[in-house]
Length: 309
Image (cartoon, rainbow, N blue to C red; front, side, top):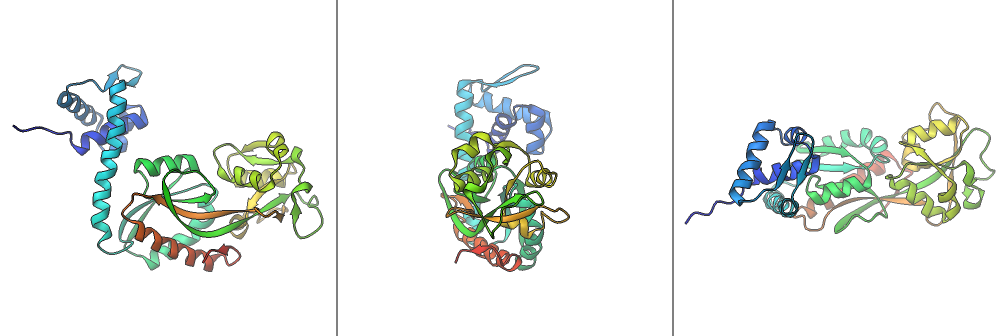
């Protein structure tokens, strides 16, 4: 007796629909037409003999069983991808496609200089980048949508392995003439009423507040900025002070401003940049090799960063 099983394509359609909550968007994500995706899901429901999705004109609602099937589908797709990765890993290292997530407080400062070097050293590597907040990047990593993530630690990202790259020192940026005397800034010298921080979702905010260990900063700071560039412009206009990592200074974020930045005088006044990946991934050796390559490239581009041997 022949038992028909769901296809990987049908499971991909189901997972995409739950992720996007819209047939058209899910179809676009799967690079198929909406009618093809709908037909594939109907075939899946017919095969299983159950209703997975309630369809109305305005709402896509998964049934309780549909949610469970979608959860299982994520794991099945991840295992299928691991099988492909296992075979690929036996071939040339850093060869073929690699999907890497990068958080917004790293991407614009490292990637422009880093990517050309990686292309020269690893011409067969097709590196696809996705810029997302730490939380979104970790979720995408565990869903199998990303292979690895360039992240700032400490950050809870679940069951992952990591390759530490370097320590990125934190600086405090002041409007012209407002910086306190001395080569560095003590935690007590920061005016909590003038502190500007990135909005929730950016781990740099948590790293900076943790380095200061001052609950009043978290209570009184204004969380306004959507990017470091926005915060720097606010500081340049005398609206307050903010934290800026060393890599952003090396990339020239203060160019054409009169903002003055001094290092934060704190034992924990840095964030650790690392490459992370799922602990179950069969490509660990490749990721370790990529981490070594990134550490070498970054060390040459930004000698001021504290590389981790």
